[in-house]
Length: 197
Image 1 (cartoon, rainbow, N blue to C red):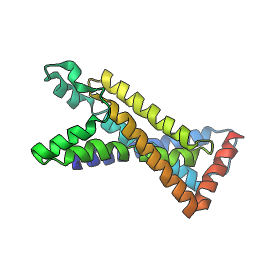
Image 2 (cartoon, rainbow, N blue to C red; image 1 turned 180 degrees about the vertical axis):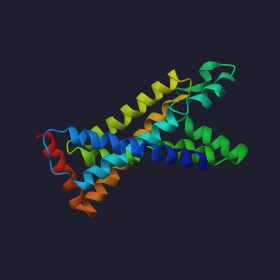
Image 3 (cartoon, helix red, strand yellow; image 1 turned 30 degrees about the vertical axis):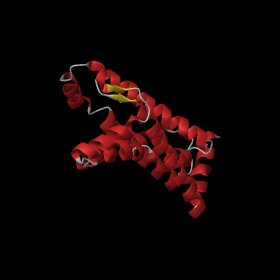
């Protein structure tokens, strides 16, 4: 678990200067100068860094996983098409090996990775409703799973609904933030409307 967190933080730190340079260039090239919102810029930066961390763990880590998968006798054993198998696998790991790490990484981790998607997307886009946020989370998750197949990594149908659940949890946090601090969402959405105009 610590390795995953450390690798994710390293990827996010490495992505930060790249993001800042690209964002500065894009803002400099923009013909129409608009007043910038610090809240929107911060949300965009955090979403980009979280996506960089997410992709570092799901796509860029393909080399190690590919070598591990080559050792398996049956190549299709790396795919899970049985929904909710995560519960049986977690219970088995806890019962046989007293391994709670499997549940933390594969269940809670898959939810936590997509919380930023559900939190920042509606903050950046005023038209991003709860349903659209869930579709975005599901779409990103499906794209990752398909890419993982091409990279020789495992693909799991449980990841799809767990990631989507994480996006839903993120949206719930966004809704809560709107109640506690309405000016934050208003500031971000006002900036989004200016950009669309």
